[in-house]
Length: 61
Image (cartoon, rainbow, N blue to C red; front, side, top):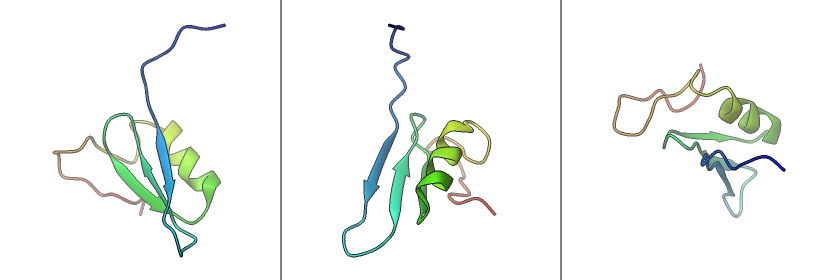
């Protein structure tokens, strides 16, 4: 077993929609309908997003 990294990724489903809301361990947030897109965005850290508190693009262009 490997040791924990301390990185927490969270994905919530927005009830009544097909939308997922993800929060990266750095605090950046992203929404997507495709779960694969969501995980690719999270695992590409830090490409495509910035930590909360900085000017953020939110979603990929």
